[in-house]
Image: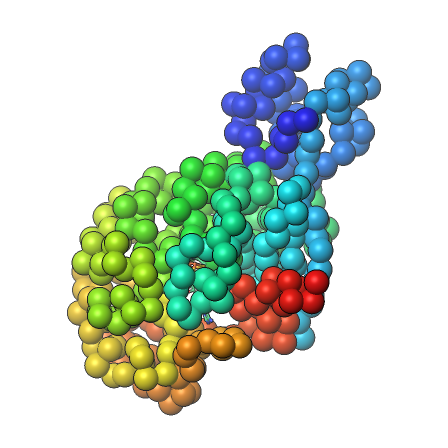
Length: 351
Ligand code: SAH
Ligand code: SF4
């Protein structure tokens, strides 16, 4: 049996041609899968019974299975999703007033080992396929019943942030195919301006994100190599100078000189001093950036503590005095452990 979710449109065209169907059937199948969210061939009423039977014999359309769903008091919804081989990842919906972002994963576990990140303590298992990456968003739409694809203005699940488990740029080919499927106007139809990819700093792949047209978020978290080397092993391979050059190249290539979001988790006594904010201003000179100051989400056994509210506000003010936006991110879904990696570990402890 061959999985259809995650194949590119030309691949779907080829499959339909190979079983002797006219080209327009490929477009119909695509729309059933990605515009209507249908996973059952029997529901595809524009196809004859024999064609449906033929498809059923050789192909599958799978959305990941939802193992657990938790709803936070602030309306954040978090799922643990399971794929065909039993591998599980987390996926979160984070609402803002009348819209919101679905946060999706790209790997099972993560090999990067950032010291503040709970996912970094879990073993890296494997990359997700393009179908599994797209599938998370489809399962989120299933959960909210948001099919067929609503118009851009009326949809609740309006944005995608690739900020779940794993490092997306170390699974670049599958990410790319997935993003192309998610953006397709005949299907899921999320525009490239509403998709953000977050990386820990895999510099050599960053400029390629400009070709995809998606927004870039960088998990910066440190103002200099000395601190960054201590908390993010990836910095040894791609030090800050190389990372900043890659960001500049992305910004040069991407349409509308899209600003870059710098994620910065505030770690008490590590990266939260006023002089660190000054260093960041120097470091990001020449780039159009916005900082997202993230209160550290503590977990059992974490080697860091969250910065004080005072320290975070002081830090934000220094950046903003230099005309760099630096909002302090509200922590969402605390009561359901919506921080990266925690639900999955909790599930594994229980089983
Ligand atoms: N691997 C990618 C994307 C997933 S991580 C990356 O690192 O960018 C998503 C974001 O959550 C990153 O900015 C990460 O640094 C941050 N994060 C991880 N652990 C955290 C914690 N305990 N508290 C707050 N933010 C955390
Ligand atoms: Fe991996 Fe990102 Fe966590 Fe680092 S912050 S361990 S890259 S998921």
